[in-house]
Image 1 (cartoon, rainbow, N blue to C red):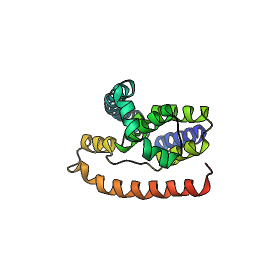
Image 2 (cartoon, helix red, strand yellow):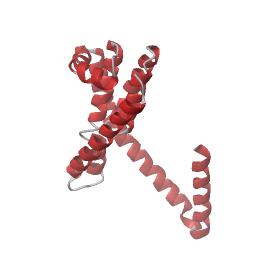
Image 3 (cartoon, one colour):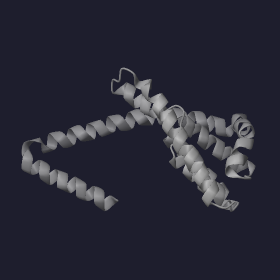
Image 4 (cartoon, helix red, strand yellow):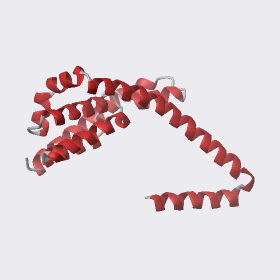
Amino acid sequence: MNAIFSVIIIVSLIMLTVISPSSILEVMSLGASEAVKLSMSLLVVYSVWLGVFELIESGAIGRFLAKILCKPINFIFGKTDEKSAKYISLNLSSNLLGLGGVATPMGIEAQKTLEDHNNTFAQNMLFVITASSIQLLPISVIGLRTQFGSQSAQDIILPTLLSTLVSTVIGILLVKIFCKK
């Protein structure tokens, strides 16, 4: 993948040199500036939510959330231990809020604990659910749309909800059909 991106960058720079040699520095500076702005705005959103989920994870709320989601998690993922269920519930909660970047650390911890218990079915299920982009509120996308001046940033909620529902249900069914517990 690095080779592909390197080739794209090199070809783009060569094309820019041929088409408009005087604008190379301006375009590169503008691109870098926009990349830093975007990174900083996402950093703020993710920092806040990572802090919130760190508090949830370390406190009683994480255990409470795992207890509430115990039956649905055991139905979808099969029998899981308490620690795995806690990380799965935190991962799913983050993803449901549309915070995929925040969900990643919890997903990695869930995968590690599931691997320790040799629960490959649950690992596969978590991977598929996460890849299906399960989310109820696409907070990151709404934040970006608001930042870039969208008049109705929340208009993507219904299409996101419908697409994530369909892809997640199909993913769960396929894992239940093709993977063994």
